[in-house]
Image 1: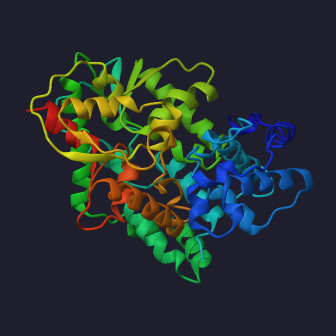
Image 2: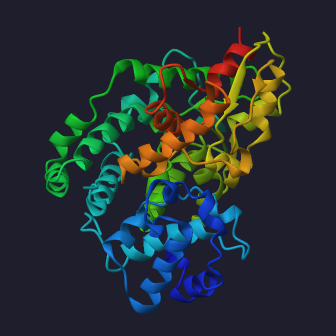
Image 3: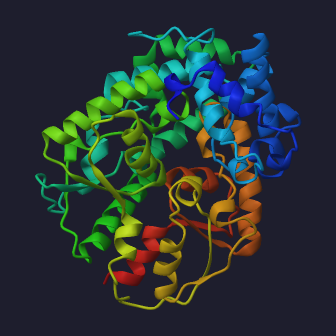
Length: 107
Length: 318
């Protein structure tokens, strides 16, 4: 799932399949190491949904998105079949190409 | 305070644009390990290292520095200052123990020795061995990744390459799956060396009676389904595999992918994984240089973390 091909509609269509059951949480390494639920897959799905739907995100949310290991453990647990880690990776591109654009050289 | 994400991303992009790799090391670091091995340069099938094994000692040094910065209240200032003076910062950051560099070179030499035991004929590109762009992709730097991928692919086609033999999970995934998605004209065949060895009916030169536990890298186990190959190769040589709590497609990450963004969190994840693995067995087999680096920095004195190629070399080579 290469970032530039994913529209906001696709993010929302796929991530709203999440029923927030939390099965993904027990396998997430970063959630086990951090206290905030935002550091788990369910929290990251919420971050993406709120960012796209309402334009709302926080520094903690941003850090959580870039602290995902993209290890794919959550994907093995999702009853809805959402490739959670792939959407998190693509959302990094979404952020970088919009408000979170770093002052890169060349572009 | 954690290092500022924007600055880290900017440094990664600058380095890839400037030197073709996420860390500013000399090109000679990439291919020095192959000197004297007599590998042909012009070959349709090549060993493509993706430079990861060679860069790991430098990554470890940098992560150590970043951890110190993370503990500093001035992290943002230090990072931006470091980025502006990147030439000086590069030299400070990449001072690395010689022994660790040689250790990773030896892994690559042993992979070559193992591949020479098969029917596969292959060469090596020396100064044209390249970085796949894995970190750009992982961090969502998709536009920069595409540009880098096009450069790498065009160079490989110019050199007449048709098939790549890869040696680590990140490079394998990027070259096998992601390049195909990003570059519609992509036509290279990609095999991982463990797949090549496993399908070659190698005869063990010696049997090694030893207990080990395997740490499956996420990309091998979940993304590429390379799970049975390493087990088959080790068991054929007499190795007894004691499976840890979470293995195969349910493996637990070593924490390595976020070592540059949050080195302290990365260490916490590595500690959890090390606890699981060392409870099963004190001899831990890894198959990825990033896993090796991250697990090694948290291992206890009585625990041994070693690359699978070292075990396979002892079994299949004289």
